Amino acid sequence: MPTPQAPDRLAWLADYMSLVYHEARNVRHIVRDGVVEPHRWKYLVALPVNREEAWRALQDIRAKARRADSAGEILQIFERRFRVSLSQLVSLYDNPAWRSQPFGGNAWKGVAELVGDLASCLGAGRLSDADVLLHTLRVARHNTGAVIDKLCQLDQRL
Image 1 (tube, rainbow, N blue to C red):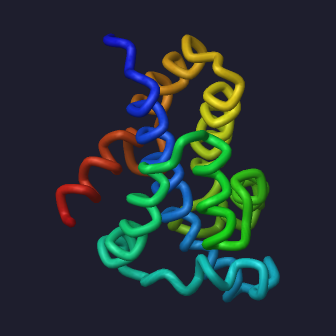
Image 2 (cartoon, rainbow, N blue to C red; image 1 turned 180 degrees about the vertical axis):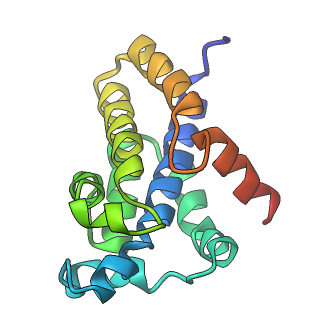
């Protein structure tokens, strides 16, 4: 596997962050069930319900994040837009209420953790560790398949 250049690593982080926040729009289901407070998640719930429309709605922030100069800046871009951090999404994805839902949830906790680890490695300049995480994220599984496949499928529908 070729080693990505630094800007490529940051672009991949931006792409995976977009995907993790995209999936978090499904918090609407456990908000509806009264499991989590609606106010904290209102910016994610405001994303379109339809997955392709939601993905299109994220493209401006994704593009902005892909232009960022650091992993920390990418994290801030998403946190400012959605008013929740990546670590808060990890906690959200860990909520046991997801087990009763056909959308989102527990399977995305591991993906969100890997994305957080990638951001930490990039922020600390641990590029070889970041490259391992980039490979791990490509093959990581969520509810219906590999993360990279979901990213590619959504991008094909833009």
